[in-house]
Image 1 (cartoon, rainbow, N blue to C red):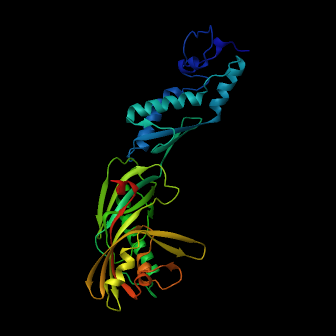
Image 2 (cartoon, one colour):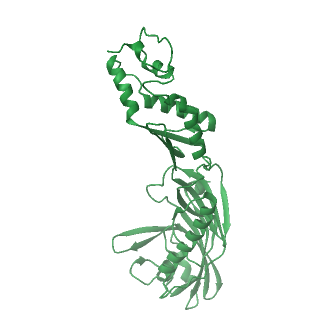
Image 3 (cartoon, one colour):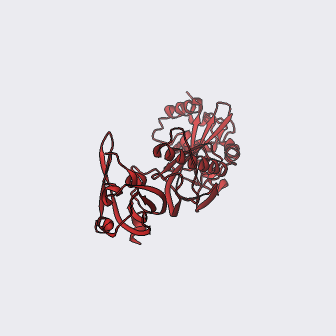
Length: 357
């Protein structure tokens, strides 16, 4: 049976075993545990540098897969000399790789939310494979729509034109973000919808965007992108999407046309209503949206300009024109005259913090 001194160990493997009262006469290059793996550390770090050179990131996480033969050699040695509870070859090497790479790249290791994850595989003969994957980037932003779109669909309805409008905006955003972030996997999450012809002014409509497989993962300042009459502002990077849609209040300018001439008495229910509760009913459930304030201005005997402050989810055109049983009350019901929406523009969309300030 071999004695300790008969094993050829390198300095690194010898020190990791923490053998009491044991000194090697000399350290071997052909180590019987790592077989010279420790001498590959700089080469491994250089391969990682090459694999990550096209990424813009701030933090990283490195994982390591070693050929089983390295564990087997160490396990045999430790079993022979009853060495227990010591750090194994993978853990020790991985710590040194992270430390070496962090010093060279001047980036920080992050075990919880890394920008990129690096996987290193080392074979029995030291062939090293490095793969890199970036974390999903989630950005919070707002967009202003500076001009309306003329969108026509077959059998056009308000619902499908709003859907096409959203897809149009999403298509523009995906194109500009794909160019900026070098990614082809982008998901757009707007908070609410607006009609194709309406403008979105003020702070703009909130949205979230998730970007996968991007080479640009770090994000430190607001980024503004303008294209096709839409101004996108990417405000900040967040860790996850909200569990439910945040609550917002919108301020909307509406021009309403009436079939009959208006009288001052027609406005009484609008100006004296206080907070107005609107009931929305669909096939699955019912919910309520609130109108917190209405300012009105008579433009002509049959045309009225309204500035409404209401919950973000209130469908404006349906509130103005709706005759179906799925919304109550409508503007026509309140005033007592049939009306139609000529124009609506979103002046601003505010959250609770905006309202308090």
